[in-house]
Length: 284
Image (cartoon, rainbow, N blue to C red):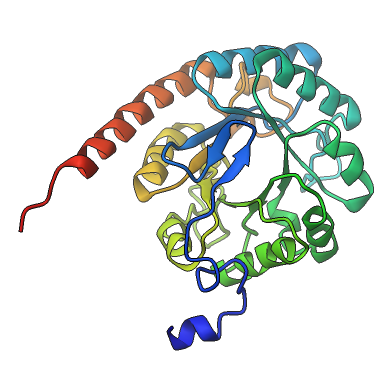
């Protein structure tokens, strides 16, 4: 045991007490298993027809889970804030119609129990990564939790936030790298793919990547998605919209269904190639 592991402040999230990698089950899906899990859907649930249409499209193109925001933390108070419980009802209906488990963000303790009635996986957004009362509250639920990295959080701070959830008894935590704020202005954020191998070394928790928020530019999303999978990510979270130019939130970073389908095809080729490489015997 190294001095670093003895002093590790996030013991439950570390490999010190849990050397084997955790696999988080969402129904029959395994996040952290042998196949990357793809979570796709619009940034915001805008209306019933929109979420049903997108859900059907991404399901046919190979998505494993459906995402959609009903409560939206926006930088401007004048931006679209989501449909609230009505949006969750539409999201749940879309999930049932397609057989896709659904993911949506929880912003506060007040709405937690209500959101749990509709979703299969709770998402803690970047702005709430260090909302410790909320982390404790989701830790008391039995729902899997996707914990996004904060805008300016170190990996240690991120893992300590996961520790709050684990410490309350909920072992089903999935980390999500979604870019951090740096001095670079050519992308919305700087997608820190270093985090994937670093987290894999330090923690047993699965890690997925959100290249949509990580870049903020749709034409960069596919390349960074493939890079994330190549780096060892356990999955992707992607924003997909049938009409990004009219989306009520995050249109510039949303893929069209056609772009999403092309990415899924390329990712399948990459995963197949990687599995072939792993099977090639190495001779001394």
